[in-house]
Length: 308
Image (cartoon, rainbow, N blue to C red):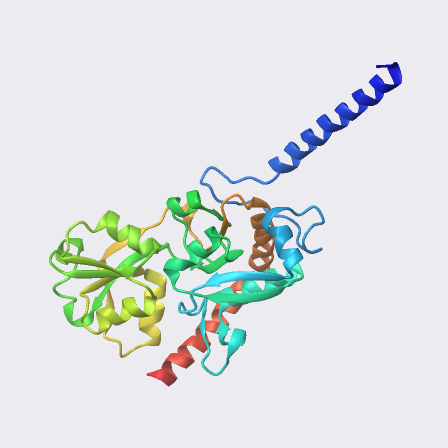
């Protein structure tokens, strides 16, 4: 090997090492924090970056963002019966999904499904993101890539137990649930909190939707349900004749660092979540998400009044 060939070989080797080092540095920019959710973000004003990889690159090439959602959780996501097709899906989370797609420069397609299937759809690669009022849980953080929080109710995030108003004197604490039928939404934070905090009951049933959960208690199929406290209060307010009430003596609080609704992506798609967090930063700093929430809370109450 002459000296020119050797020099060329050394230069090529140096370039390879430099590229590898640059790749490691770039990769290190995208990380999860100690609680396994992503709190970093990127500038989304110019759309998907040219060096996008993984899911973010696939979304750009496809020209469409696929979002898994259970559209039965007003005012975040619900169905407007006066509309059809994609237009029937409305709510604050729907608006957030639209803005993410807009910032990406692609179309949005909402893929409706039962809540228990939402995360599986993302894990299996059927959808790019799950936007469905998802709460943080350690198990979700291990299985999925989670965003920072984008909606905070302004009160301590907690779950409670809803019962029929006629049973309020008999059920005042967790111990009074012994011998009773309890329900919670399958795959929800409330399902895991029921298993953790309520140890004595006659039967614990998992139901597919929040409507089924409230309906089971209202219709006497179940005696109590573990539910999100803020959502339950909104439900009772918008359905004054439902006959349901929260038990004052039962509340399961969430640790502060885990508060907030979050968006989920496939595990390892951290660059995608940096983009999502960039949009979340935008709507939080402008107050836009809360404005959407207030707007659709009014619409949900109006639709409920027309129905009942």
